[in-house]
Image 1: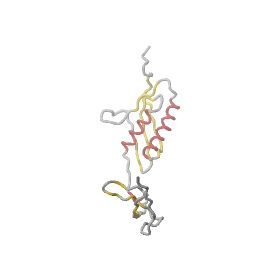
Image 2 (image 1 turned 120 degrees about the horizontal axis):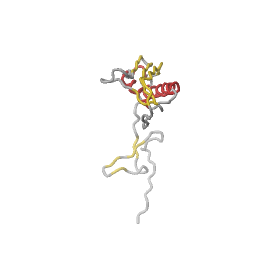
Image 3 (image 1 turned 90 degrees about the vertical axis):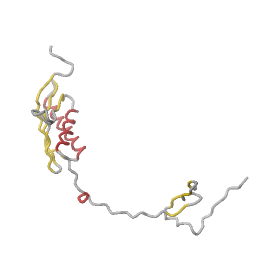
Image 4 (image 1 turned 45 degrees about the vertical axis):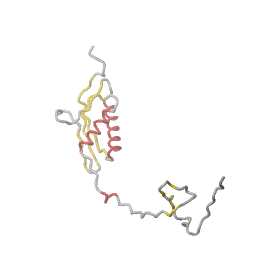
Length: 157
C-alpha cells in the first residue's frame, strides 16, 4: 500500500494573480493540483464604433414580404397579395429610406369583421414585426381592402 503524495508550492510556480492552465501530456491532462503553467494574457483590441463597421441595407422586397406575412397573421385577414410575376393588380409594396419605411398592402378580409378594427390591428402588428425583424421604423401603412369574403367552410345559402 502506498501513501498519498503531497505536493508543496515551489518558488518556481507562477504568482497567484497570473491565470494558469493545466499541463498537457501525451498520456492526458494532469490534475489541477499536480501541475499548472502560466497562461499568456491575450491583448484586447478596442471595439470599432458602429458607424465605421459598415452598412447593412435591407431591400424593399424583403420588407414587403415581412409586411405581407405579418398582415396575414392578423385574425380576420384572408389573403394578402404579394408582388410577383403573375399578380399585377394586387400587391404588397414597401419603400425604404435609410431607417424609415412606408408599406402598402392589398388585403382580403372575412365577413363580418369590423374593417376599421382589423385595419388598426394590421397596422399595429405589421409595424411591430417590421421593427423587430429589420430595425426599421414604419412611417405609415396604406391598406387597400380589396374584398370581403365568406369565412372558410361556409358556402352560399
